[in-house]
Picture 1 (cartoon, rainbow, N blue to C red):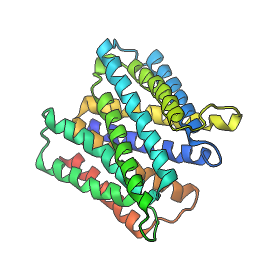
Picture 2: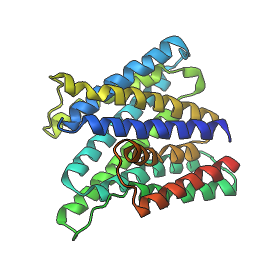
Picture 3: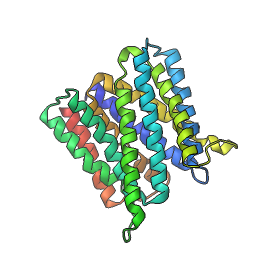
Picture 4: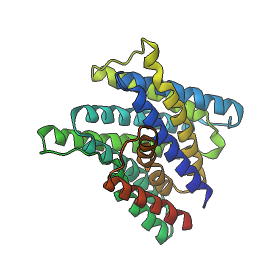
Length: 281
Protein backbone atom coordinates (compact mmCIF):
# COMPACT_ATOMS: atom_id res chain seq x y z
CA UNK A 1 0.00 0.00 0.00
CA UNK A 2 1.46 3.35 -1.04
CA UNK A 3 2.33 6.09 1.40
CA UNK A 4 -0.27 8.41 -0.15
CA UNK A 5 -3.06 5.87 0.35
CA UNK A 6 -2.09 5.26 3.98
CA UNK A 7 -1.92 8.99 4.74
CA UNK A 8 -5.25 9.68 3.01
CA UNK A 9 -6.94 6.91 5.01
CA UNK A 10 -5.38 8.28 8.21
CA UNK A 11 -6.80 11.69 7.26
CA UNK A 12 -10.24 10.12 6.76
CA UNK A 13 -9.95 8.43 10.15
CA UNK A 14 -9.02 11.72 11.83
CA UNK A 15 -11.82 13.62 10.10
CA UNK A 16 -14.33 10.94 11.05
CA UNK A 17 -13.16 10.96 14.67
CA UNK A 18 -13.25 14.76 14.73
CA UNK A 19 -16.85 14.79 13.49
CA UNK A 20 -17.79 12.19 16.09
CA UNK A 21 -16.18 14.10 18.98
CA UNK A 22 -17.53 17.44 17.78
CA UNK A 23 -20.99 15.96 17.47
CA UNK A 24 -20.87 14.72 21.05
CA UNK A 25 -19.85 18.11 22.43
CA UNK A 26 -22.33 19.96 20.21
CA UNK A 27 -25.30 18.39 21.97
CA UNK A 28 -27.04 21.24 23.74
CA UNK A 29 -24.42 23.76 22.56
CA UNK A 30 -24.47 26.09 19.56
CA UNK A 31 -22.77 24.29 16.68
CA UNK A 32 -21.10 27.58 15.75
CA UNK A 33 -19.32 27.78 19.08
CA UNK A 34 -18.08 24.22 18.59
CA UNK A 35 -16.98 25.04 15.04
CA UNK A 36 -15.08 28.14 16.19
CA UNK A 37 -13.33 26.48 19.12
CA UNK A 38 -12.56 23.57 16.81
CA UNK A 39 -10.70 25.92 14.48
CA UNK A 40 -8.77 27.25 17.47
CA UNK A 41 -7.85 23.73 18.56
CA UNK A 42 -6.77 22.84 15.03
CA UNK A 43 -4.61 25.95 14.79
CA UNK A 44 -2.89 25.09 18.08
CA UNK A 45 -2.23 21.51 16.98
CA UNK A 46 -0.69 22.35 13.61
CA UNK A 47 1.26 25.28 15.07
CA UNK A 48 2.88 22.88 17.53
CA UNK A 49 3.61 20.52 14.65
CA UNK A 50 5.13 23.34 12.60
CA UNK A 51 7.22 24.59 15.51
CA UNK A 52 8.73 21.19 16.26
CA UNK A 53 9.06 18.73 13.40
CA UNK A 54 7.70 20.44 10.26
CA UNK A 55 8.73 24.12 10.11
CA UNK A 56 9.46 24.21 6.38
CA UNK A 57 10.00 27.35 4.30
CA UNK A 58 6.53 28.48 3.15
CA UNK A 59 6.04 31.19 0.53
CA UNK A 60 3.25 33.78 0.31
CA UNK A 61 1.64 31.62 -2.36
CA UNK A 62 1.57 28.67 0.03
CA UNK A 63 -0.16 30.80 2.67
CA UNK A 64 -2.65 32.05 0.06
CA UNK A 65 -3.65 28.50 -0.92
CA UNK A 66 -3.97 27.53 2.73
CA UNK A 67 -6.12 30.60 3.42
CA UNK A 68 -8.41 29.63 0.53
CA UNK A 69 -8.71 26.18 2.10
CA UNK A 70 -9.60 27.78 5.42
CA UNK A 71 -12.42 29.78 3.86
CA UNK A 72 -13.66 26.65 2.09
CA UNK A 73 -13.62 24.58 5.27
CA UNK A 74 -15.48 27.24 7.23
CA UNK A 75 -18.09 27.68 4.49
CA UNK A 76 -18.50 23.91 4.25
CA UNK A 77 -19.21 23.66 7.96
CA UNK A 78 -21.57 26.64 7.84
CA UNK A 79 -23.77 25.27 5.10
CA UNK A 80 -23.63 21.76 6.54
CA UNK A 81 -24.89 23.01 9.93
CA UNK A 82 -27.58 25.11 8.29
CA UNK A 83 -28.70 22.19 6.18
CA UNK A 84 -28.82 19.81 9.12
CA UNK A 85 -30.90 22.33 11.04
CA UNK A 86 -33.35 22.97 8.22
CA UNK A 87 -33.66 19.58 6.50
CA UNK A 88 -33.18 15.87 6.89
CA UNK A 89 -29.68 14.60 7.65
CA UNK A 90 -30.24 11.78 5.17
CA UNK A 91 -30.28 14.39 2.40
CA UNK A 92 -27.60 16.84 3.53
CA UNK A 93 -24.86 14.51 4.79
CA UNK A 94 -24.44 12.25 1.72
CA UNK A 95 -24.66 15.16 -0.73
CA UNK A 96 -21.95 17.07 1.15
CA UNK A 97 -19.68 14.02 1.50
CA UNK A 98 -19.89 13.13 -2.20
CA UNK A 99 -19.45 16.77 -3.17
CA UNK A 100 -16.31 16.98 -1.06
CA UNK A 101 -14.83 14.18 -3.17
CA UNK A 102 -15.95 15.50 -6.56
CA UNK A 103 -14.12 18.84 -6.60
CA UNK A 104 -10.59 17.54 -5.87
CA UNK A 105 -11.25 14.73 -8.35
CA UNK A 106 -12.19 17.22 -11.06
CA UNK A 107 -9.26 19.53 -10.29
CA UNK A 108 -6.87 16.57 -10.23
CA UNK A 109 -8.04 15.42 -13.67
CA UNK A 110 -7.80 18.94 -15.11
CA UNK A 111 -4.26 19.34 -13.77
CA UNK A 112 -3.03 16.10 -15.30
CA UNK A 113 -3.72 13.23 -12.88
CA UNK A 114 -3.70 9.99 -14.87
CA UNK A 115 -3.91 7.03 -12.48
CA UNK A 116 -4.18 3.47 -13.86
CA UNK A 117 -7.58 2.01 -14.71
CA UNK A 118 -7.88 -0.05 -11.52
CA UNK A 119 -7.36 3.11 -9.44
CA UNK A 120 -10.08 4.91 -11.39
CA UNK A 121 -12.39 1.98 -10.76
CA UNK A 122 -11.58 2.19 -7.04
CA UNK A 123 -12.33 5.92 -7.05
CA UNK A 124 -15.70 5.35 -8.74
CA UNK A 125 -16.60 2.61 -6.25
CA UNK A 126 -16.05 5.09 -3.40
CA UNK A 127 -18.89 7.41 -4.44
CA UNK A 128 -21.84 5.07 -3.85
CA UNK A 129 -20.05 3.88 -0.71
CA UNK A 130 -19.77 7.41 0.68
CA UNK A 131 -23.41 8.06 -0.18
CA UNK A 132 -24.71 4.91 1.48
CA UNK A 133 -22.66 5.20 4.66
CA UNK A 134 -23.68 8.85 5.10
CA UNK A 135 -27.39 8.18 4.74
CA UNK A 136 -29.49 8.44 7.87
CA UNK A 137 -32.69 6.56 8.60
CA UNK A 138 -34.89 9.52 7.65
CA UNK A 139 -38.19 8.51 6.17
CA UNK A 140 -41.43 10.18 5.24
CA UNK A 141 -42.86 12.33 2.52
CA UNK A 142 -40.73 14.93 0.81
CA UNK A 143 -41.07 18.40 2.25
CA UNK A 144 -40.52 21.75 0.50
CA UNK A 145 -37.50 22.49 2.69
CA UNK A 146 -35.81 19.30 1.49
CA UNK A 147 -34.79 21.07 -1.73
CA UNK A 148 -33.11 23.82 0.30
CA UNK A 149 -31.41 21.15 2.42
CA UNK A 150 -30.01 19.51 -0.71
CA UNK A 151 -28.76 22.91 -1.85
CA UNK A 152 -27.00 23.38 1.46
CA UNK A 153 -25.47 19.93 1.07
CA UNK A 154 -24.13 20.87 -2.36
CA UNK A 155 -22.64 24.12 -1.01
CA UNK A 156 -21.14 22.29 1.97
CA UNK A 157 -19.56 19.73 -0.34
CA UNK A 158 -18.09 22.49 -2.50
CA UNK A 159 -16.70 24.17 0.62
CA UNK A 160 -15.01 21.00 1.83
CA UNK A 161 -13.81 20.36 -1.71
CA UNK A 162 -12.19 23.82 -1.76
CA UNK A 163 -10.50 22.92 1.53
CA UNK A 164 -9.03 19.78 -0.04
CA UNK A 165 -7.97 21.58 -3.21
CA UNK A 166 -6.41 24.52 -1.37
CA UNK A 167 -4.44 22.33 1.02
CA UNK A 168 -3.47 20.08 -1.88
CA UNK A 169 -1.58 22.94 -3.56
CA UNK A 170 0.84 23.40 -0.64
CA UNK A 171 4.22 21.76 -1.46
CA UNK A 172 6.25 19.60 0.90
CA UNK A 173 8.81 22.40 1.30
CA UNK A 174 6.24 24.60 3.05
CA UNK A 175 5.99 22.58 6.26
CA UNK A 176 2.95 22.93 8.50
CA UNK A 177 2.81 26.69 9.05
CA UNK A 178 0.35 27.21 6.17
CA UNK A 179 -2.06 24.88 7.96
CA UNK A 180 -1.97 27.20 10.98
CA UNK A 181 -3.04 30.04 8.70
CA UNK A 182 -5.73 27.78 7.23
CA UNK A 183 -7.24 27.17 10.68
CA UNK A 184 -7.00 30.82 11.76
CA UNK A 185 -8.60 32.05 8.54
CA UNK A 186 -11.24 29.35 9.03
CA UNK A 187 -11.96 30.72 12.51
CA UNK A 188 -12.45 34.26 11.17
CA UNK A 189 -14.62 32.99 8.32
CA UNK A 190 -16.72 30.98 10.80
CA UNK A 191 -17.43 34.12 12.81
CA UNK A 192 -18.28 36.12 9.69
CA UNK A 193 -20.70 33.47 8.40
CA UNK A 194 -22.26 32.99 11.85
CA UNK A 195 -22.85 36.74 12.07
CA UNK A 196 -24.37 36.76 8.58
CA UNK A 197 -26.73 33.95 9.57
CA UNK A 198 -27.39 35.53 12.99
CA UNK A 199 -26.17 32.51 14.92
CA UNK A 200 -24.53 32.57 18.40
CA UNK A 201 -20.80 31.98 18.05
CA UNK A 202 -18.98 33.53 21.02
CA UNK A 203 -17.82 30.91 23.59
CA UNK A 204 -18.94 31.97 27.06
CA UNK A 205 -18.78 28.89 29.27
CA UNK A 206 -16.42 25.92 29.57
CA UNK A 207 -18.68 23.59 27.59
CA UNK A 208 -18.53 25.91 24.59
CA UNK A 209 -14.85 24.95 24.26
CA UNK A 210 -15.73 21.32 23.61
CA UNK A 211 -14.75 21.77 19.99
CA UNK A 212 -11.06 22.06 20.90
CA UNK A 213 -10.34 18.29 21.06
CA UNK A 214 -12.31 17.76 17.85
CA UNK A 215 -10.30 20.54 16.22
CA UNK A 216 -6.99 19.07 17.36
CA UNK A 217 -7.85 15.72 15.79
CA UNK A 218 -9.18 17.41 12.66
CA UNK A 219 -6.08 19.58 12.37
CA UNK A 220 -3.85 16.51 12.50
CA UNK A 221 -6.11 14.96 9.87
CA UNK A 222 -5.53 17.94 7.58
CA UNK A 223 -1.78 17.61 8.15
CA UNK A 224 -2.03 13.97 7.12
CA UNK A 225 -4.06 14.92 4.05
CA UNK A 226 -1.46 17.53 3.12
CA UNK A 227 1.26 14.87 3.30
CA UNK A 228 -0.91 12.49 1.27
CA UNK A 229 -1.27 15.00 -1.58
CA UNK A 230 2.49 15.49 -1.55
CA UNK A 231 3.02 11.75 -2.08
CA UNK A 232 0.17 11.08 -4.50
CA UNK A 233 -2.43 12.62 -6.79
CA UNK A 234 -5.06 15.04 -5.53
CA UNK A 235 -7.84 13.23 -7.38
CA UNK A 236 -7.22 9.97 -5.52
CA UNK A 237 -6.30 11.29 -2.08
CA UNK A 238 -9.28 13.67 -2.09
CA UNK A 239 -11.71 10.84 -2.70
CA UNK A 240 -10.10 8.59 -0.08
CA UNK A 241 -10.14 11.37 2.53
CA UNK A 242 -13.84 11.87 1.80
CA UNK A 243 -14.61 8.38 3.12
CA UNK A 244 -14.47 9.88 6.63
CA UNK A 245 -18.18 9.09 7.33
CA UNK A 246 -17.15 5.42 7.57
CA UNK A 247 -15.18 6.18 10.71
CA UNK A 248 -17.83 8.45 12.19
CA UNK A 249 -20.41 5.69 11.81
CA UNK A 250 -17.96 3.10 13.14
CA UNK A 251 -17.19 5.12 16.26
CA UNK A 252 -20.90 5.72 16.88
CA UNK A 253 -21.45 1.97 16.71
CA UNK A 254 -18.53 1.14 19.01
CA UNK A 255 -18.90 3.90 21.58
CA UNK A 256 -22.59 4.76 21.53
CA UNK A 257 -23.81 1.31 20.48
CA UNK A 258 -25.68 2.83 17.56
CA UNK A 259 -26.99 0.29 15.08
CA UNK A 260 -25.32 0.10 11.67
CA UNK A 261 -28.07 -0.30 9.09
CA UNK A 262 -27.81 -2.60 6.09
CA UNK A 263 -27.30 0.26 3.66
CA UNK A 264 -24.51 1.70 5.78
CA UNK A 265 -22.83 -1.71 6.05
CA UNK A 266 -22.92 -1.97 2.25
CA UNK A 267 -21.44 1.52 1.99
CA UNK A 268 -18.63 0.63 4.38
CA UNK A 269 -17.87 -2.46 2.31
CA UNK A 270 -17.73 -0.38 -0.88
CA UNK A 271 -15.42 2.20 0.73
CA UNK A 272 -13.07 -0.54 1.94
CA UNK A 273 -13.13 -2.08 -1.53
CA UNK A 274 -12.26 1.33 -2.96
CA UNK A 275 -9.25 1.67 -0.67
CA UNK A 276 -8.09 -1.84 -1.57
CA UNK A 277 -8.36 -1.20 -5.31
CA UNK A 278 -6.51 2.11 -5.06
CA UNK A 279 -3.80 0.47 -2.94
CA UNK A 280 -3.34 -2.35 -5.46
CA UNK A 281 -3.13 0.17 -8.29
